[in-house]
Length: 58
Ligand code: SF4
Image 1 (spheres, rainbow, N blue to C red):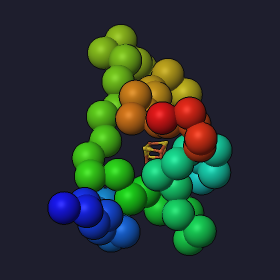
Image 2: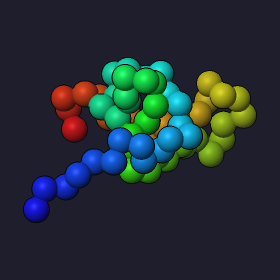
Image 3: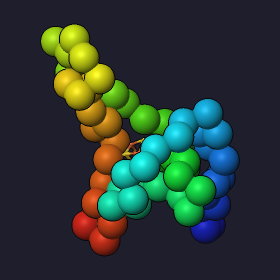
């Protein structure tokens, strides 16, 4: 059976990371779920999306 992707999985998540395979043409995320990590983060720049996946590599 073919798995269908829901392109509105995270309608509230905007993202400009165009190199990520989950990034859509309208700058949103279509991953089923995302995980934002760095438990020691104290600023926006110290957070990162561990769900990021470069296009064509995963
Ligand atoms: S997985 Fe992370 S980096 Fe990729 S589009 Fe979604 S929020 Fe952006």
